[in-house]
Amino acid sequence: MKRLKLAASGLEFSRMIYGTWRLLDTKPTAQEINRRLHACVDLGITTIDTAEIYGLYEVEQALGAALALSPGLRDKLEIVTKAGIYVPCAYHPERQTAHYNATGARLVKSLEKSLRLLGTDRVELFLVHRPDWLTRADDTAAGLNQLLRTGKIHAAGVSNYSASQFDLLNAHMEKPLATNQLEFHLLHHDPIHDGTFHQCEKQGVLPMAWSPLAGGRLFDSKNDAAQRLAVTAQSLAARYGGATLEQLAYAWVMAHPSRPLPVIGTNKLERILSAAQADKITLEHEDWYALWEAAQGRRVP
Ligand SMILES: NC(=O)c1ccc[n+]([C@@H]2O[C@H](COP(=O)([O-])OP(=O)(O)OC[C@H]3O[C@@H](n4cnc5c(N)ncnc54)[C@H](OP(=O)(O)O)[C@@H]3O)[C@@H](O)[C@H]2O)c1
Image (cartoon, rainbow, N blue to C red):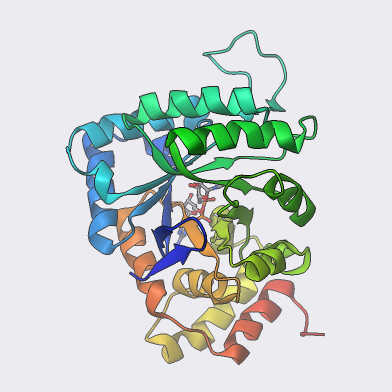
């Protein structure tokens, strides 16, 4: 598995990242999660993406329990976590309305809780999960800068920010933002056109691409685009050593010149193994556009 430097932050991440949003969907034991993390490390997928809200605030604790089973495992990983989304849940029955909160004080409190649950004293990267329309950028930055200064986070970044929101927050940062984690896959092309990927490329910031398989919709037999993509993928497979739609979809994401890091979400070990092979695929120009056409259901204009 290749590794890439997140410019300015000094961090190096694996080319593909393992995402834990769905981690608890199959109710795994701590031992099973521990085995999965070891399998990722063995494949060179050393960067793990999580968030305070995942599993309705339960994933980080499960990860912490799994990490505790193997002393030393945590140090083989780069951990990315996020905060800023607060929804009604069993832990907070008083909450009536889901909301975003990216005030500095709230982010610091959330990150400190994440460290406790994960059983670590720092994370490599901390992201503001969603833009909070009510908070001034200097307030958000004050919290992130405080966490950077204390060494509780090595770098800060954002997720789901527009280019202008990124610029505004970055202007208040003591250390430049290290990434913007965005939805990008064959069924969602916005970052190519809305300026976010251009901004990353211009600033030498590597974006992360969430839901690189469209959250599984790429395999939905009722989805017309998925059907067209299945046919196109079959016609391309031989040229890429028998690559599957899944592998071509990851390669399609990674081919964008801003070099997005796909955050993969499968709970199946065999699919993690297969995903890791996509790192070796470099799509020909024409084939990338053939997949674009199949996804869009129209010719390249
Ligand atoms: N920043 C954000 O706002 C944000 C938002 C969403 C996600 N994320 C991050 O991105 C990560 C990945 O998101 P995601 O889980 O939506 O990613 P994804 O990789 O696009 O989708 C994973 C889903 O697709 C299914 N799948 C994979 N291969 C399949 C196949 N061949 N046939 C049928 N189904 C298949 C998986 O099921 P199996 O488990 O059965 O394989 C799983 O349910 C998350 O874990 C999280 O870390 C971030």
